[in-house]
Image (cartoon, rainbow, N blue to C red; front, top):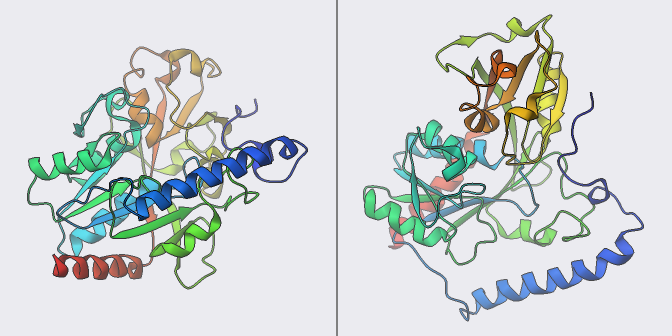
Length: 339
């Protein structure tokens, strides 16, 4: 069975005949995006500044590129350096209205899958809200000891003033280099020159301000009971269905191949809301292996869906040079010293 259509459209990786119609729309999108940034820069649109420094982790492309594992890594590294971070996120895919605090046992359908993972892996306060500035203020009111806010996926959310920006690209890079809808870019490639650092997920760094990030499996556990953990070798000789509802499902399937886990790939759209019917491809002796991002949405299906009785989760962690955290910490210390 082929993986379901997911990830970027093919025309975002190259030029095709459709660009004759799409390019004028891309130029309009670029004009409006630049105008919006200019209005914030001239303070004709109001920016909200929090009383603590703000680090934004984001990207210039649509879809997932590895921001969440990078945010987890950065939070953990800043804690080692004496900081007390909190995290704000939009909570994409969640139903919660307004600003909401995320706890490790929150419902992913309410707060979003990525914020829930952040709450589970960082042990620091996590708040979600479409208005990240409001989410930051609520976080600091509830947890006044926090001395830095990490904004997950907010590079274009200019309403929130920021002190440090880190951009993430995966192996797809900038695709065909065109703005939406002709290509995958939210902002032009020039934007990468304005950030503190560019993180390349799964590919080599090519410029002075770039860092290579590698995602590695950090464990495998049962979807029904996270305390039941196994080694990768348990999947040898099994009929494995690999499930990934992330921005680039192929990244997960490649990771499994690199660790000699043979599988049949099933890619879903990013933030896909799973139902029992999504697993009809699993035969009676089949095993399912999914990402943690999918697992937080599927754990409520596990007991009532026979196809998920042998479902397992592959957890991953990010590996990056400590120099990146040192640079961020240096910038934060500078801004804290000015306040």
